[in-house]
Length: 261
Length: 219
Image 1 (cartoon, rainbow over the protein chains, first blue to last red):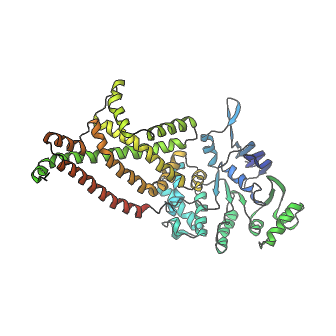
Image 2: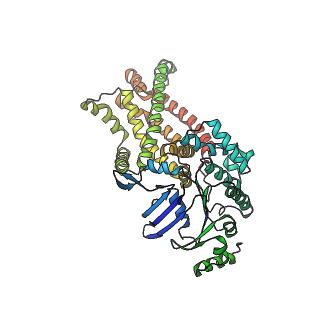
């Protein structure tokens, strides 16, 4: 595919009277690593949740891998997507959550193999072999039989990354994946993500408050405020020479709060 | 009024027969209540309100009327509509249905206890709704509710004498019939009480164990 892998076109999203996304449009090219930054409530997490179909949209269009995400054609007309269509589309996309959301009643290995076995019909042996490779990659090869409750936050998040990767999505969404971690556990998760970004051609969207990491990780940074993109560009430009005063104010505040840029 | 051990020995086989049926009815009704209650709880959560609303109405209706009336209805009124059920089947359906509306509430609370993030993780890994229920939600929701469900099991057990009203030959009915034919009530009724007490005490011990084993899993 030569065109964008994600096209967001005049997207609106409201929660009741609250407008979270306001006529938002942007494209993402295959393999691009995107960092979404901005103050809380600016709508950046909502974008990821919409792409994962955890939220519906209020207006506009979202296209993923050349197909409409929330619409489908029926008898020559565009109608809202049904659950079967969403299921079909979700296989392109994986997500890692702020609070990990591992399945607490399943072992680390079963957390990773559950979906490949159920949704792709993979034989257990094959799914387990792949899960072990992924655990190796995230540095947790010895934790396959552990239960999530026995892991640290950083380990849980690395398992969650492995779980999302097991489905081989073309697009990975990372929603503030280090925000719930103790500071000393942040680095181990970021290391895994850095390696992932370097070694794969997956498209990645990252919502984060770790500006230093966003700088290093992203090809392009989007600065959001009040449901719109205020400014976007290469990290060097956004972080070193932001042109918009709201971007400057936001970065000043972040630096004042002790974050490294 | 004097206690006659000879009479006790004489009626014991009949009462044990009744006790056996009481236990069978309790277990069958409990199975119905456990399965049907889960179905009701899931149906009430349905996004389709043409499913959720009628189910909610039926649940309130059943909870709002006495079990005895429902048993009479199933056993004595349904035959007028051509539905003739043996006493045992009518009893199991009546008790199971009645208690399903209570277990449904337990399930509802248990299901709501499963964090939203679990549903979202299931969605993000592209599980279907059915797979989400079977592999993610129910296995997490059920263990914390086992003590509450066991409580209803004990309550059902103690309600089984109601079934004597629809001619089920459970413990109470057997005791009544031996009492009526011999004009001696003290031994049969005392024994019925003793049987129920013994079973309930045993259940309480098991229940405490279940609470220790599963009660804290929800937190």
